Amino acid sequence: MSQHLATEAVRKAIEQYVKDRAENRFTTADIARFMGIDEYPVRAAVSWLARYGLIEIIPGVRSKRYRSMPTDRRPHDDDYSVSMYRVKEKASEVDFAALNRAFGFA
Image (cartoon, rainbow, N blue to C red; front, top):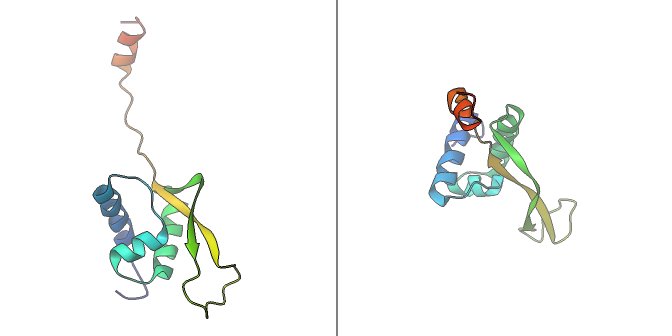
């Protein structure tokens, strides 16, 4: 895949990843591995998906990562943590008739 990865392709990959694992949590590295591509364009797409409310960071949950190579010059120690994401739940329509029956108004 090209470096200019469509956000829609990442969204679909996330949905399939979550469905395949029956667990709504993932990192950008998980999705990149699942798609067989570099992580950087996935991170950009995930940023847009989060901005538009389709996914969200799981508060207080981090995934531990390790420096991949001794030549890695990123400013962190041998290990560091990354955000875990989840697909945001879509709200369903309210059944006011059922609520009225449940609370004795009908």
